[in-house]
Length: 78
Image 1 (tube, rainbow, N blue to C red):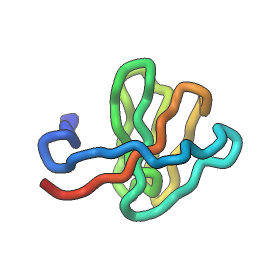
Image 2: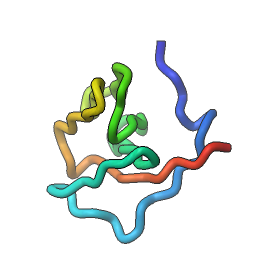
Image 3: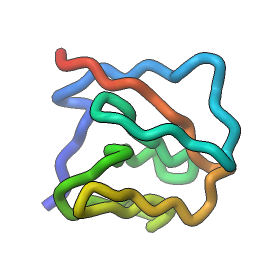
Image 4: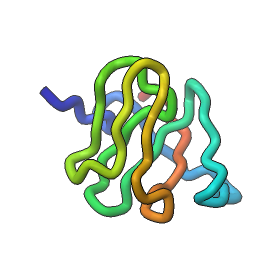
């Protein structure tokens, strides 16, 4: 079952955009896949993945296959 994070949070791009080879992590930072528009926490503690498989995470870590296809966003509860 996939959770639509946009129903829970408002997302705002981190400015200036961090370089793809040095993506930041944090409790309020999320990665948005630019290929499928899926959003995964940068420190996902539950199993999560975007639809195309570029982002996947669990256990406090998130794996990014193509960092050039990721936008770092900050999530704020609605």
